[in-house]
Every structure is written in C-alpha cells, then in structure tokens.
Image (cartoon, rainbow, N blue to C red):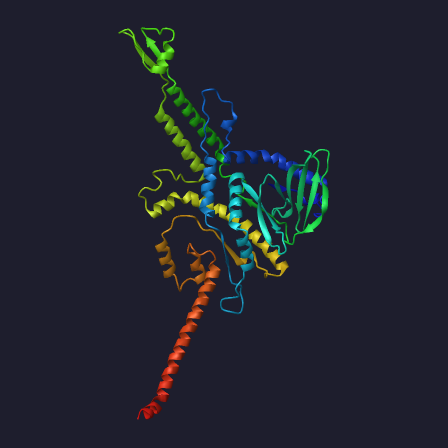
Length: 472
C-alpha cells in the first residue's frame, strides 16, 4: 500500500522511531480487508460460497474477475517489454551510442518478464503493487527485482504535491518454533536497509535487529505501480454485478434440479403399501383403474427471460471494465480489420492507460539498476529520458504486411526504429548494430574482391609483352 506522512513526523529517516513503524503497520492491517476480498474474488472464492445453502440449493459462480484481469494482462504484457536506447548528442552526426548491455543482461538473467507479469497482475487485482530492488547473493552480486504483495509492503511518501518517497517497510507476521507470534519489518531508506522486530502492536515496540546495511541504489529501492489514479482493481467496480450473476446462475441451476425432482400426482386411485418402492424401482405400475391418470407437478419459469437477464449482466460487466467478450459470436464474424479495431477501441484505451502507469515504474527501476551498476563500475550513467520503454500489444498480425511496411520505409526511417516494428526482434539496438557490422563486412569483402580483380588485370597488362616473347 501507499501511505502519506508529514515529513515532520520523521526528521531523521535513518533513525525512525518505533511509534512511526507501529503506526504504519497498523494502517496496513486496517487496509488489508479490502485487499483480501479482491484477492479472494480473483481466486474464485466469491461471497456466494460464504453463505449457508439449503439442502437442495446449488452454489455456482462464473469468475469474471479473473477473466477481466488476465485478458488485459495478456493484451499488453503478453509480449515482453523492450528497451530502446537513444543516441546521446555529440560532435558526430548520429551522436554517441548508449550501452545498455550490462543492465539488459541483469534483466535477462533473472527473467524480468516474469516479474513484470506479476506486477501487472497485482495492479489489475488490487489496484496497486510494489517492487523491491535488491542485490543478489554470491561472489558477484547484481541487482534483482521481486514483486511485493501490497498487503505486506508499505511505501511512505510525504504530503507534498510531488509525494516524494520517505522510506518503505516490508513486514509480515511470523512465529517462533515454540509458536510465539511476532512482527518482523525491514525498513528501506534512500541509503540503507534495517530490520526491526516487535511482539505485538499494542504493548511492544519495534526494536532494531542488527546494524543498518547500505544498498547502493541511490534512492528508496521500492517502486509503486498504480493501476489508476484511484488505485482500484480492474474488476473492483463490478463486484456487485459479479455477485448478481453468481446469484442468477445458482438460482437457475437450483430451479433445474427442482424441475427434475417434480412431484408425481395420481388422480382416481391410491397406491397400496409397498407400491411406492416398486414404482421407483421398476418404473411400472399394474392394476390402475381405467379412469385414473398420473401427472407431474412442475415449477414453470421463463428460461428465455432468465437468459436475457444473464446476457445483460455479462454485457454490463464487459462495458464497465472496458474489456471485450472474446466468446461473443458477433465479435468478429465477417467484419473488416478496421471494424475490429473499432471494437477493440475500449480495450486499447484501457491498456494504454495501464502502459503509462507501468512505464513510470519501469523507468524508475531502470534508474535504480543503472545507479547500482554505475557504483560497481560496469556501466555509465544513463538518464531515463535516454531510453524508450516499448510495449507490444499482443494481437494477431499480418506478418507479410508488416514486413512490406518496414521495407517500404527503409531510407526514410532509421534501421533501429524499423527493426523494432518486427515481432521477432527482441533487442532493436543490438539488431541494428549487427546489421551495421554485417554491412561493413560485406563492403570490405566486396572491396577486397574488387582490388584483387583490378590487380590481376594490371598484372596481365604488364606481363603481356614478356609472355608473348616467351611463347616465341
């Protein structure tokens, strides 16, 4: 979660009072009820299952919460995020090239795309999520990232309009091997990290455990990712519609069961003792009077009207969440490509907003990694404005059309930008360098061949008369 605190409450960030830590953890526990409910709905544990049900009642749900989050997540993070370095201004015509290889190597070795998916999922489910940057262990440490559940992470910012970071807390409730519960928290500032421990939040105070440790990231190494300005999850505004659909679906199934268990009524006759069991077993009854008849008493309900109501609820859920219903038969049909783009307009608006929100955090991560690697001496300083964060919308494409477009734009757009449009290029900058190197090698080979050809011609012209004398 994100918490705002007056800067005067923490005059020394490296010596935070136990009361401040206890206050932050208490606020986090109060906010966890909302997070718990959203996480429960995403996992399919809806409120309808928490109510007592009768013997003949059926409880069922359709997990539209998971559908809404997953379809948006796959739409803008199904393809990995790319990082395209710009050229710095210099005396040369093209400027000096920025080397992102050390940073991208750290990303690649830890499979940063998996962390991005976890962050995107946290944003979609709970409305906000945190990322912790830390140094790996071993003889040759390097920066790493981990997704932190907002129920166990607190980013504390000041109350100014810029909301500058003050410190961050990662906390959880633990217990000893003897079953004694306690709170454990790690405080991160712009320079150090330190552990704290407390028995409870009422009588015990958080006392430091061990000395402070420098982390060398140059800023608070915890990044907040907000789903929107309100920090609401993707399905948070349709929880009532999800409950209504679950209730309708459950009632519909319960009615079907009652329809099967209809009452059999006999007119003009009565069953002798023991014939009830025989009728249920053999499905046959003999000796009934000629004027007797048997009928089922069934509950009647309007199936068409129920389906209309169910379809209306589904349409409202997709409309309010700005997602498309991929199972709708009218979604594609024989529509043209432009018509499909119009149908996906709301989805594009949704994911573009998510991209802008996530790009801010990814740039902050890049700055933290760059500072750590610069302190280590393996990378130059790089400004966040020198790197473009590129998202690729995960949609089926016309590959031949895309290649033709890139070919036509050659000469009008630089190679790196063009290569970034190709779906199979993961690092456009590296591909552009490889292409330039290949061209240089081909030019050099062609030049050597031309030189050899010209040399043979000159020798033939010079040695021609002498050769003729030998033949005589």
